[in-house]
Structure formats: C-alpha cells, structure tokens
Length: 245
Image (cartoon, rainbow, N blue to C red; front, side, top):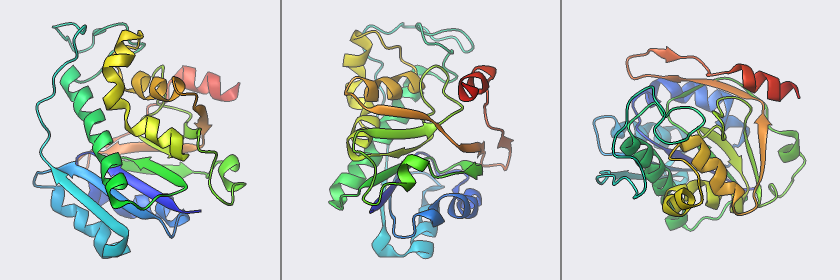
C-alpha cells in the first residue's frame, strides 16, 4: 500500500510538533511520501526538517502567497465573533475570509500531490500544528493490503462540530479528491444549502459524491501554538454520546 501524507497550513509550531507527529503517526507509514503547501512567511523554512528526516526524494514542498479571499455571493456582509454567521451548527471562530483561506490552502496541498504524479493508495491529511495523544489505525484500514476503498474516509470521532473533524483524515483516492477540493465546490455547496462552516463544508463535499464517512477513528490530538501554548482536544458531550452509540 502506497501512502501520501499531505500537510497544509502555516508551519508556526511544526518544529516543535514534528517529533510527536513522527512517533504517533508517520512511523506507521514508513514508505510514505510527503507533500506540503504552506505560507511564504518566516516559518516556511521549517519544512526543511522534513527533508532532513525523510530525504529529499520523499518530500515535495510548495511555499506560496495566499491571494485575497473573496467571500462567495449569497453570504452575509457582516461577521460577529461568537455569533452565527449563517446557519452553521457551531459559530465559526474566525472571519469568513480565513475559512476560505484554510480551504484554499487545503486545495493547494492536493495540487502539490497531483503535480508530483506519484499516485498513492492511501492519502493522509494532517495539519502541521497537531500534537497527538493517541492514534489507532482503523481496523478497516489494517485489513486492506492494497489500500482502502477509494470512496471511504476515516476521520476522528471528536471535533466534528456538526460536520467532520477537518484536521486529520485517512482517505481513499476518491474520498481524498472530494475532501481536498472542497474549496473549488464552495459556491455550489452554498447554493445547495450548506453554510460557510469548514467542518460542514468538508463533510458535505464528501457526502455529495457518495463517500462513506467513518467518523469514529480513534485519534486524539490538540494544537500547539507558535509560543508553545497548547490547546487541548475539543471534545464535546455530543461527541462522547455519539461515540458510545
């Protein structure tokens, strides 16, 4: 089974998180290749740590300036932090333009992978600022010698916020295409009734093309800020209720 690990987003705390990411996740996929899309800022050079650790032949990196994000038509003109922006299940915590930017960079990670022309059976989506507490490879994936069903995704059981956890995922090929190209389909999904809410958009991007979403993957992680401040896993009572069945 060939594996691609796509890392997208700002590299703010990546140097601190990489040893944890390697031990908790990456070492389980020893032949994986890495594809990185990140911002052209002072932290971008930390991508070199991947090359030093895994070798230049296994790492592809794109460092880019994010264009100005335009809010799609039909969205409200005003956003107030802590208040619903549209009809999302949980109010978005950042400005709508930042939601667009997150999903744009996710799409750029997919582009780096595609441009490399190195098809994989399993595609892993992961943010560079995650700090894992546990990770168990899904039984359904362990049983697949040649990779998962192309139309299956495995996402964590918590941090779903009414959609799916959009920070880490194990994806079949068709599931990965839908997941990573969420940005391209935002206008259509808004017209179909989905709110501008990242977890809802990523979840619906897969649903609308028939992806089987297994949102009970045993993986717990928080995020590490650049200053070392740690944000614990966002586990809600509804996550616990659903996980227990």
